[in-house]
Image (cartoon, rainbow, N blue to C red; front, side, top):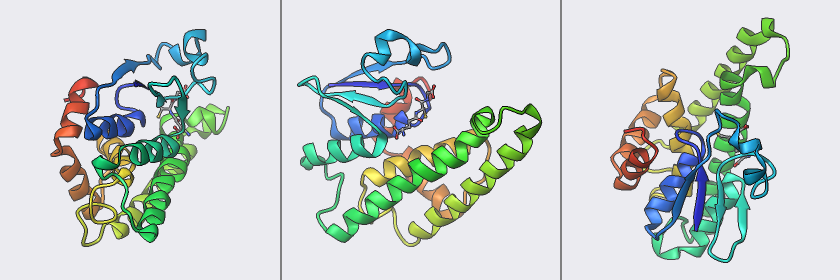
Length: 204
Ligand SMILES: N[C@@H](CCC(=O)N[C@@H](CS)C(=O)NCC(=O)O)C(=O)O
């Protein structure tokens, strides 16, 4: 199995899941800053030019964070990455999608890549401010979801990997997290799989 990732970006959550599972895999760093995601070597694997991408032992290519995470959980049941209960499974998918589609794509992308939302440099501050509003609302919702729990649905699941990467980004940009999210991030950072991931990505 191969994981195509870039240090510190959203693929870090999938990297954590690979480490939680503990099976051998090859991590392949894609240099996003140098544009390696647009080069033919990579677009032959993922024409969308994004990480994460996972290629399994049969050569099947998997893209899109929630799909990869769900596939990893279902194909490695011994790792207990998805609860059995259907209502909790739905909650896991709901939270993971909210992290990826809203907090990441709508919120953090406005902060990291304001030019994607307006070609006019004069709009940059307003775009970033809107991104900040979106992540604040997002973390308030996550804070509520984490109330009274160590992990999003009680036991650790794939939802926590997605919550982790947006919390990790908040910390990196100095955005204060509400208390349950801050405690969740600390709990995640204490997991050996997270520590191995950070070391592998040169972030520890
Ligand atoms: N919808 C994709 C989003 C992945 C994504 O946005 N990846 C970013 C890193 S966080 C990326 O590869 N960016 C490279 C680029 O846009 O050039 C998913 O769920 O996996």
